[in-house]
Image (cartoon, rainbow over all chains, first blue to last red; front, side, top):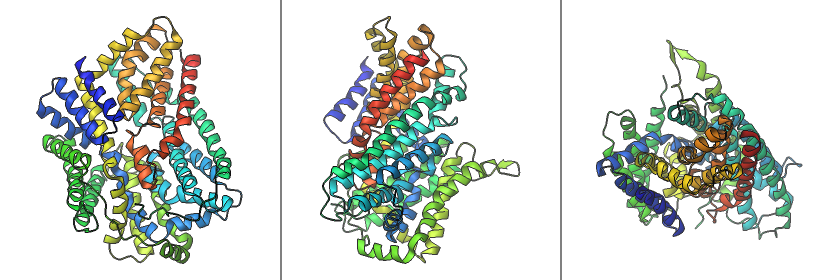
Length: 235
Length: 322
């Protein structure tokens, strides 16, 4: 029972808005020690956990080239390009992005899109460009909203697309856990097929919300002109 | 064979070079702490190769991770002003380069695609060219390197320090959020060793009213959702909730269709990932990357979708899986 204090540490830290790194670090130490691990094994757990999860951070590899291209005006060009397509509103563009992201993830191409490699340099500025062409210069609230929805299109597309693919981590986690714990045999294909209904719901729900974004922007008051550009240091 | 570890070393190297730049950046009031954080992260990436291969002790790396937690957690890291180009300069450059700027940018996804689909099948002397199981990560890494070379040649940029410097300010703005996902993975493994899952199972079985199939479905899905919010990812929640409700109640007792129950249960967890700041790589890092004033912006945009999809999952599971 006492090991649940670790969960409590996370919840309390969350509630009191402590720095998440400290909260998670403390929860790990508390749980490990209460669960009977020696301090040395707790330390080793942090080391092996870090080493085996390095793939989460691999996107850093794209930052230098993205930074270089932005230095030479990539975002500005993305904005200019999108304004040439008359019918493409911010909402329609992001709904299209959601669809492409979901299809790519469903065929196993998780890393083809992403926040660092496609959302920041391309999708967000394009959505902003499309919104500005239609509604004029965006106010700060509207701009934040467009950018937030660009990030959401990437996340929803990834989460509810990837499970349709067989060899993705979460599917392998399910089969690995169930097959070893319950001595049964589940095929990844059966699981992937059952991910399709939710995937379609996600496309419908979030796609509809993205399309509605245009109407919400229409209601928002136009801004005083271009405020902070993406890529500038905002203090 | 091209190995994933090479790219971890490259990422580690990028961190180290950036740390050196940070140390000499006088516009950053906390430059020493910042450089120490990213320097340790870089060393950890490289040393991690031998920890993952079990040929080096993991304790020093664990100590380094805790040191990074303290550096970032107690506010010893900061960010410099950077010397970004002004919007006018960038507009002028965009005018000059035009759509050619998209060539290196699109090189990353195109190369990643080619690696994941085509190069994956190639082998040299009976050995696959790309390390098995890491093809998409390798694709991203190779794509980034090819794009960097293309970009530097095209833009006639001679110094490698320019792209590194340009990427650094993005990294500084992400700060501690960079380390959180890896730390959460650790927490998940400590939880399972310490037996947190068994305890949660005991509690859930005690409070779960017997007999109501619909309630059991709701408890499984909502449990996945809530536990994912606390833990930051569905992977940590899945073994706990499945051992508690999913398998014993929904599959064994009610004779549910196992693949359907488990797949939809995992997706209910993903709804939780959409709304938790603990899933820093999906929700907090993008807010920093997009320079949002409201770091919960993406979560707010996702919340209605997440709630609606949780409902969809409960309905799908209740009507079709059990």
